[in-house]
Image 1 (cartoon, rainbow, N blue to C red):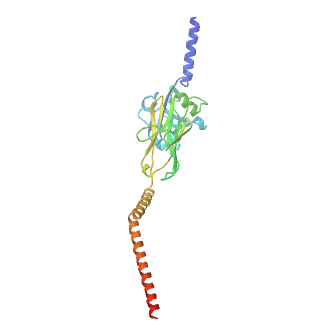
Image 2 (image 1 turned 90 degrees about the vertical axis):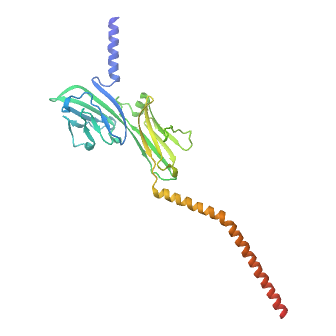
Image 3 (image 1 turned 120 degrees about the vertical axis):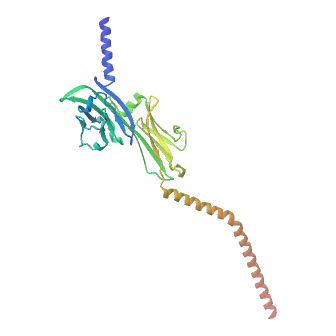
Length: 288
């Protein structure tokens, strides 16, 4: 009986290691909005960071592993090396995160070319908003997408989000969740990693903000906002058109009685002239 319990315990330990990633790897999931700065922790760092190596990989794009730092020194042959720096605690700092930065980052320690301790892996998930062309009176669609990297092989972003209880949704400036119950908005979610917002832009939407939130088990992780900017030309043009319409209406309202009065005066004058003309004809006939 004791042997069976011992085997069950070993099985549970093995299963736990599979569910939490590779044995001996410290894993962290971080959510960040595009455009913000992020600090990726290195929980296995040794003093002075001279033994620290940072590598990057994005499995779903089949990209090779990229070495960002080696021996505490930054590699300058990477496309984003100017946005990368190493913190005093050997953390990896990324400035102005883009949707291209999502993926797996792993911090390792090497002393005399010998791997030391456990690896620290950080999965970076980036929330990004894009849109079609913005102009007053036109329909616009905002796209909110989570660029996500799963720690489990062959698991899609959509499957991972559903299993982890992650939710994407749009809110207005007051923080109220937008739904299709409001006839002005059309919300669409083709999968759990993308949610779109379609609406028609009004003049009063200038500087209006819509925000895409992401929650993990009902806890807000990050959000990214989109502020509507309508060009001054469009706003002034729309305002000019409105003023012209107002002037025309006012003219029609206030000028109509005057026009009618002028028509009556002209008609009466025309009648008098016709009467005088008939009298002249009669007098000329009598004189003849």
